[in-house]
Image (cartoon, rainbow, N blue to C red; front, side, top):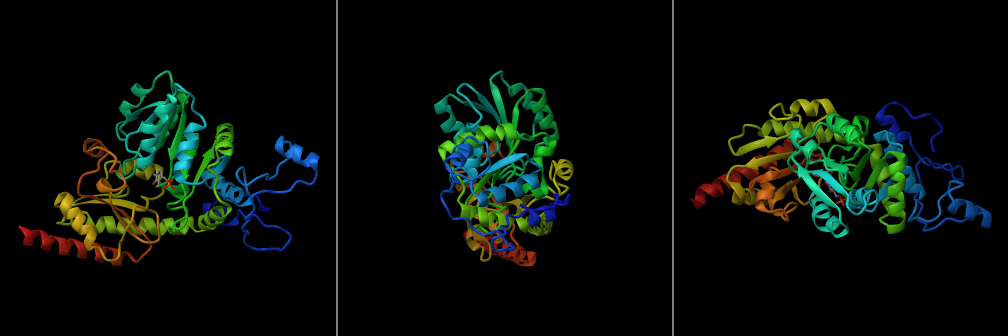
Length: 402
Ligand SMILES: *Cc1c(COP(=O)(O)O)cnc(C)c1O
């Protein structure tokens, strides 16, 4: 690993944490596509298995590429330890399953990524693990929902797709007072925009599929945080096997090197687009954490470096207009992903959050006309132009059918 003490600057840490071998004097880390590693002797094998010496054994447990990725991510999140996982959901699930026991209770924010909601409501109950939901923007609800058997608080901030925030400093304090483990899904913000561990979170989870990859190529996840908790989660993952492939780890480690410059551009573009469409006569509402009209604008300024790459807009005319609008976009992609170089539009109610009932959708701010936009790295004028054009085309369509 790098010879120098890590810089205090995010950008330098991201590019200067590298695995380099003396063998070929390569400047960039190679890919270690090997399922296992050899031992010098029977004694070395015994000592490695007994954790008396460091070393890779088998790529389900660890691999130089995932080690490098995680060393870098730990530096960026200011975490003691961590591990890579096969997907973001493997990270969300394992971070909780590795720490929970039968009878435990999880207190979570109501607005959660769709599959995390399924884990809490459909999968954990099979093992006697219950949960309660609190509204992310109503801090007064949280304390009263804590029970004697509560072990974990799990939150996503900003939330998907509502873009609501929770005050991490306040929540970190609550977790400390009540001796609970605070886990934050930091997927939307990335460590460049927000560092939950510095506010008292114990574990940070990522879907690296999103902004960390940033180019829509891999599915992956990561868990970083306090060493003793990561030790328990590592035991769970080592024996259940949701490991990250060396190839994906290599891609993601390269991606982290450009995270800061990419996020700056995603955020600048998103703010420009949000400002352009706020108050537009065909748009009901625009939501973006760094727009002063966002109800938690002050909090966003306090705990985030910038507003992130996502915004939502509610197209006038509800569900039907919303869908016609999506079909009229020419540049923007229609996919369920986010955090790509290419701008993506998603109709949350009929796709990512379609498993929620209509009431559950409304409770987390998903109205029928809500379109989530993951702003990419195209020139913002082209994105604005495409949205303007789709609004114009569907406005005409609506008046013609009347
Ligand atoms: C995508 C996503 C996940 C799940 O990650 P996968 O890599 O798709 O498994 C979890 N949380 C959030 C906020 C996400 O956006």
